[in-house]
Amino acid sequence: MSDDEKAKVIAELRRIPGVGENAAEGLYKLGIRSAADLKGKDAAAMYDELRNMKGSYAEPCMLNSFKIAVKASEKK
Image 1 (spheres, rainbow, N blue to C red):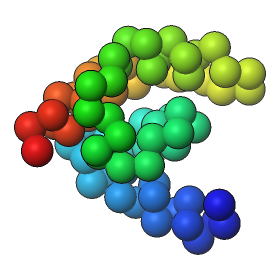
Image 2 (image 1 turned 180 degrees about the vertical axis):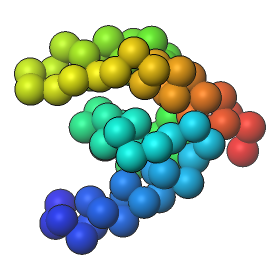
Image 3 (image 1 turned 60 degrees about the vertical axis):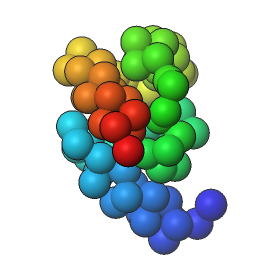
Image 4 (image 1 turned 90 degrees about the horizontal axis):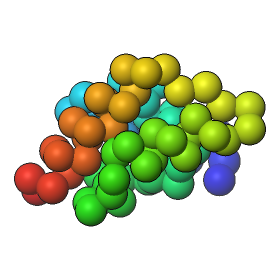
């Protein structure tokens, strides 16, 4: 994926309630490309996966962002 395509995906992810720049980057690293990709996901499992990725840092507040994002995706 080119840098332009990644930037578009990040911008789209940031439109999800609760998702800021860092959370969007984290979701991107996890393979999430849209709100639809979050449906049925386990926010805690995603957070743990991100924390365990080599070279990745996940702030504790990111778990809350993931929870909000998953819940928002399920309302659509």
